[in-house]
Image (cartoon, rainbow, N blue to C red; front, top):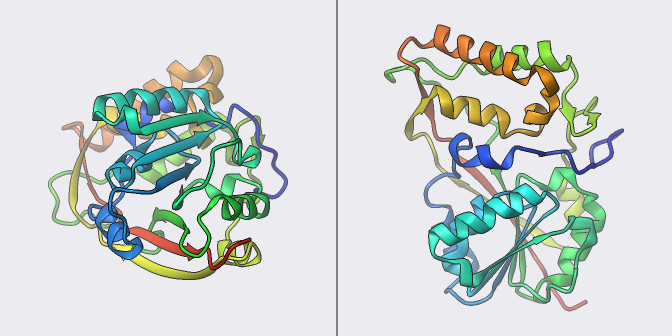
Length: 282
């Protein structure tokens, strides 16, 4: 859990409806990679911890007979259920509003547990040990998934300007202050890293590292960029209070000034995957 910060239930308050339009998917080929490396054949159970609106879990649903997503945010759980209905997989998915620290919550044993850019919000030592106890011994795997942070995704040669991320961050800072907001608190020291040490202490073996390549050219609208901003914890809608409309108007002006066409070019991020194995019975 981030140093000097305590979780509260407003961390992603109001952000769930913006995920679908705002967030980019993981790189194409992620499900195929996991199917090959973990020998997934449509059987077994998946636990997605910090599932949000089901983005990762639903993209992997065809690889398992049952998928369980857990998240403390009621809006995220409702959105995940709706998207599962639309995807035609509601019968094989279950969405549980619970904090990762409250697991195992009677959910049973799983073949694979995934964390899609969520682990840093948790009491990592507690959650890692608990999740290991929920995985099938000598065969279960924990999979940590994130965008590859070390690549440069230049938009040279693409038809529209890039999304003005630096200017957007400056605008958010003008409204919310210079220190990153997170729920009712602030992240003075950022979010923690060092997952390898945490998972090693919990008894996992590994990791095995894979990169699913991105780089595909994407086109984004102003509405999609606004949705991206409101989908993040640091600029969740509730943080702006009575100034939300003013912020959204200023953000719209910034985007229109950057691109008269109201379109932006971007490249799909690559996806970094770390697989940790559960080596033995407990």
